[in-house]
Length: 92
View 1: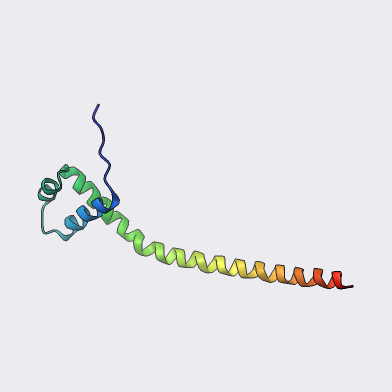
View 2: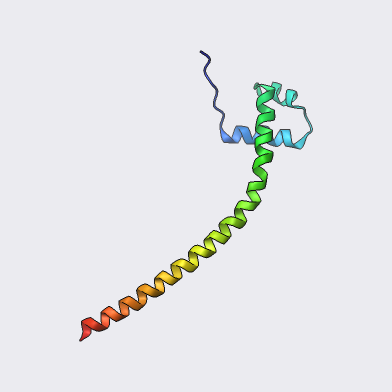
């Protein structure tokens, strides 16, 4: 059985940056980095597919954060009112 190689994220990013630049072919990059050319094209495809998520996730995260902030502010207000009510009851 063959042992599978695992590559670091930095290595993959470096290879994909080279591939996306388009100055060298996948075969040239693979020979330089001592990996299979299919791996270069697979990582390149994954990088291209993931690029759309880079920009859309920022918008979605910002919207989620705004909703969460509103929810937390409402909860803080409710707790403050309850705290005031209970503190007045203890003073009597």
